[in-house]
Length: 96
Image (cartoon, rainbow, N blue to C red; front, side, top):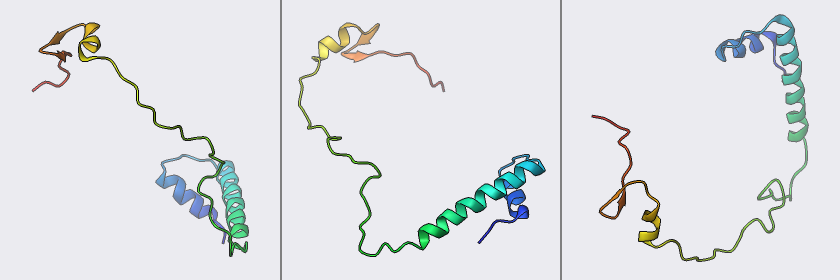
């Protein structure tokens, strides 16, 4: 399978890209090279090979959950510019 110049022009038009003839030829070559790589991959015998969970090793990527005591309610409100009835007061950003 290969991509024609007209197909590159069609995709460029759909993407609203203005490409000159040199760019169209360049993209055609690059896209056909990609399709060639995909074709090579499809030809591989992968029977018996399980798919990896991640592309890179992830050992040690997960940290244990650790419980920490956070700020008390009154401490969290201590540095608030404005508070009322135990809540942060913020400016209204949505108007009727």
